[in-house]
Length: 133
Image 1: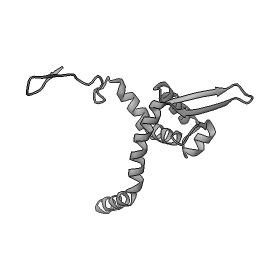
Image 2 (image 1 turned 180 degrees about the vertical axis):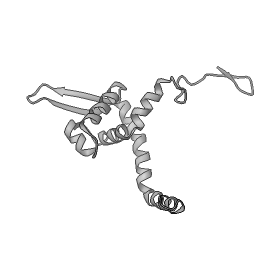
Image 3 (image 1 turned 135 degrees about the vertical axis):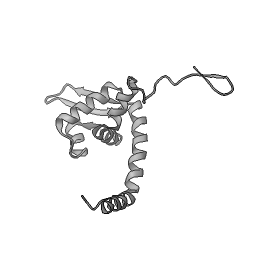
Image 4 (image 1 turned 90 degrees about the vertical axis):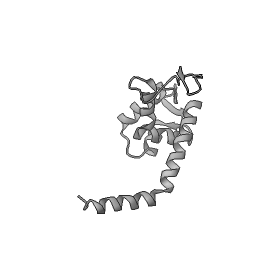
């Protein structure tokens, strides 16, 4: 509990991503990392099989996608369903929690995409001011 100027006790938030040992930091890394964010955003479109997802998230290696999906599944953001077929079929989809996270990520993705002309102009100004080292 902390005391405000009026001496009213307010509960501290249970998690603080800025604290080194806070478990929310690891989840934030899984979500905000390059492959985690792209994977969650792609899965927002609907369920994917592993290779479909790998094609959708262009540039991710099989190993990185596998590790990313395992981390997101462990965090409760992705559901993995293996079908007992031959060959085995595995589908990945967002959980309700993952869907909520993906909605917020997609807002950032859409904002960045819509402002890329400004970003590219800023990069050019920056590079010009540095003599394009």
